Image (cartoon, rainbow, N blue to C red; front, side):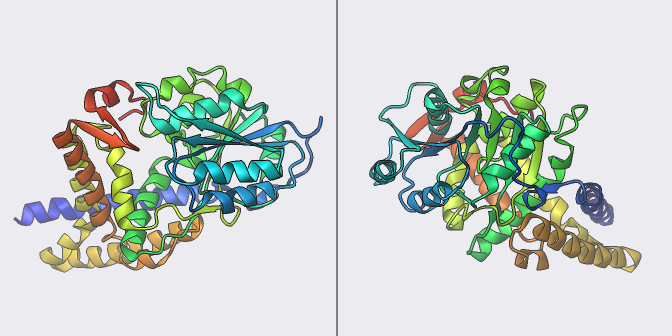
Length: 384
């Protein structure tokens, strides 16, 4: 038993230590939108099309779309793709479009076989939009005035082909906050977004809230159809563009880009179900269990006593500082950083639950459509 506790404690301390090293390496290199200036680029403002896939988004669509419409960007087009909504999403979009000629609405009534709904909606929006730059942004995302000028100016000045922004997220429920705190900390640190701009690095990131792409660069890739069954479509878009040689960049949005994300832990559980067939169930369940072990395993040091207990105490205090620092950097709630290890448990449960459901069902049901596991596996594009 002593050997087991020692191994667990060492592995956990190494895990937290690796996160600390990554944070130290990346914190000064991650760029934020507040440092950008919206100066008009040489040659004027290129056409920007914002493609907004929307399915049953009546609760947030009008407010988020109104904020986007308040933008002063002089060459803007907003394309709302109403993806088979059963609520008032389509009517809201049409009402807004009637009052603003910059807004176009595409209504989808059917989903072709072999497509995930969101990727199909993105593809249809891309077909009708006219911009040199295309921003794929979820319907519940709020983008502050002036952001479009900032990012287009940066893209033109730095010859960027792909630019994504991590938004400020303010979940209310404590259990949801704890789960998301763990998810975002691990994602931000281990995806190494500060290396996205380095063409020698394989680091690549995509964010559903704000994925801006130069149309000519997207044309050099395998296209959205290649991603049609990728459940992690947002990240996969960034990976695909980076692999094609596109010049990429990542920003933290802070107050410039924000959303609620999930209204409750239960909603998060249902949303993550689509990822349950992304990998074999034993692999996903094992990864979830390993995450919990690595996050909380440092407390095994207290069971060993002596210097191990001291190491565990120092590790626990350091992990609190690290979690709080990541939360401040990403503009996410800091309260979960008081007990950062505990967030891994509800998050791991969500992942393991999705894998079990996919195993039992033989696939995943997402937005009214069932996708067999074999079909999802064939459409997998993200490594791992």
